[in-house]
Image 1 (spheres, rainbow, N blue to C red):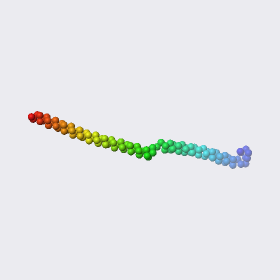
Image 2 (cartoon, rainbow, N blue to C red):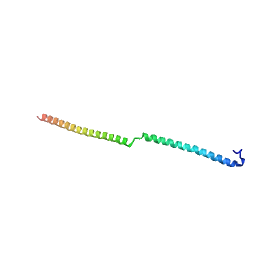
Image 3 (cartoon, rainbow, N blue to C red):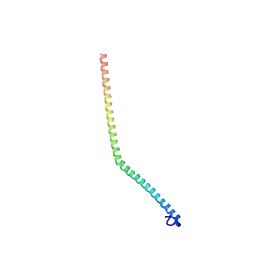
Length: 105
C-alpha cells in the first residue's frame, strides 16, 4: 500500500495498526467467549448431577425412620434385658433361700 500512495504512507501505517489491533481484539474476544462457554457447560453439568431438595428430604426421611426403628428396637431390648436380670436375680435369691433352708434344717 505504501508503494501505491507514498504521500499517504503514515495513514497506511495507522490503518494497518488499527487492523492489527482489531485482529488482536477479535482473538481475545473469541478466547473469552470460549472460556465462558466452557464455564457454562461445567455449570450445566454440575446442575444436572446435583441432588434435588426433594430427593434429599426423601433420603433424610428414610434415615429418620430407620433411626426411630433402631431406637425402638433398642428400647425393647433394654426392657427385655431388665426383665431377664430381674428374673435371674429372683432365681438366684430363691436358690440361696433354699440353700439356707436346707443348711438350717
